[in-house]
Image (cartoon, protein in one colour):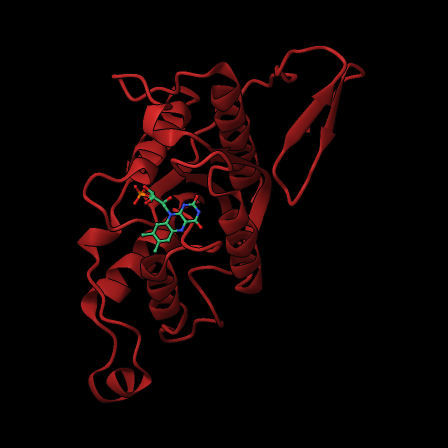
Length: 224
Ligand SMILES: Cc1cc2nc3c(=O)[nH]c(=O)nc-3n(C[C@H](O)[C@H](O)[C@H](O)COP(=O)(O)O)c2cc1C
């Protein structure tokens, strides 16, 4: 982790705050240009005009600039009914569950930008994770798509807190299924006005949080 004498990092619920006597939000940079991690980006929203999808898109752009292979997916392309044990028993898993499992299992790292719904992550995200978590193909250990994987998380909200409370819950959920969630994260407050026309983040501090989060994702994904 980049660290210098002038910049103290404080992880409040893993939010990656920086406390400094100076009013800068820079961090020691590292060269990630030669890294070719395969990364998946998606949003936990099923809205067609999702601000979290915009955050996931921008995260993918940042990762691509750093040399990663990136793919942005949408949960809308993996339509899943509400998880139902009886349906699983009688009909097996929906094809979309297998498809999503394969995409996640093949990735070196994943970035999720999830809306905060009443202080937690969205039901559509939880439902997708629940379906995928139950698939165990021939010879596979438990939670084969998730165990030991590296994820980074973010949230975007029109509100000032940027969905930060939901990230606490999401970090916990992912940890419970064996995922290593990188320490840096981004909670993008005021998200309706946070993006430039080209999709980049208008505010330098926001851009730095995203940059640091993607740096960590690439570094840990490559190490894993
Ligand atoms: C059921 C529901 C609960 C919400 N709860 C919160 C909340 O706890 N905190 C928050 O910041 N925004 C909350 N919002 C507002 C969302 O942040 C906002 O709708 C946002 O645009 C959702 O992200 P999306 O555009 O990516 O779908 C809630 C929205 C809905 C529909």
